[in-house]
Image (cartoon, rainbow over all chains, first blue to last red; front, side, top):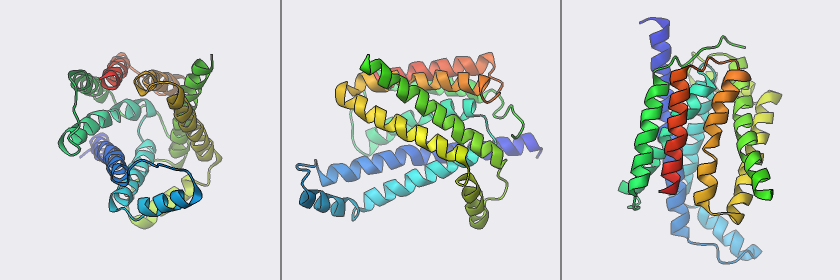
Amino acid sequence: MDLARRMHGKTLVFLVLMVTFGPLGDVLLSRGMKRIGAVSSFSPGTLFFTFSRVFSSLAIWLGIGSLFLFFISYLLVLSWADYSYIQPVSALGYGVVALLGYFFLHDAVTMWRWLGVLTICVGVFLVGQTPHSTTTPV
Amino acid sequence: MRIALFLAIIVFAGTGGEMFVSRAMKRIGEVHDFSPWSLLRVMAGAFSSGTMWTGIALMTLSFFALLALLSWRNVSFVVPATALNYALGALGGRYLLGERVSRMRWLGVALVCLGVVFVCIG
């Protein structure tokens, strides 16, 4: 396997990690916070109680863990790939959020949203046809 | 005026911050070894750089400006407007980071911007 193909495979792996763990983290945090419910008062006692519930929630910790993995993947992929390549491709996360919302949170996903996801996918496909790295290391 | 100012902060500080982070990681160089110890060393190197912290500070500023704007305007206005990040990201990549942004990449970025607007108004 030549260097370009190996780099391409590595970029793909980290992009998949990014568009999986980023949206998954958002959905888990959303799910965790919805279970806890709206913050009704901002008095110190209520806030302490809310925080203790937030940080004893498995969904919140899984969400934080997912977002941590997303950020590490993002940093690592930027060590070799173009920012102008990674940034638009990471918009695939919008599609993953729509799918996770639809299947796990049973959110209503409108026609506009599906059309948007499709447009993003076509855009990402076009960006994906370009070389992922066009610069030499700084 | 206040809305336009905060929108500009969100887009410029957000994209600028990501570009600083990108620059800091390019300075570290391509990561080849993904063992935990090696990754820890890479992260320690990355977070000891002023460029990285400048990027994180700008991204934080953008996040708080987003929160403020969300308190004045509906999310269906705010989030599609932030799709401008993608256009600015391609411009920044081209002119500040020296990346080669081909016509195909521009077209892809334009479609991504449009798609984000559709997702958010949906």
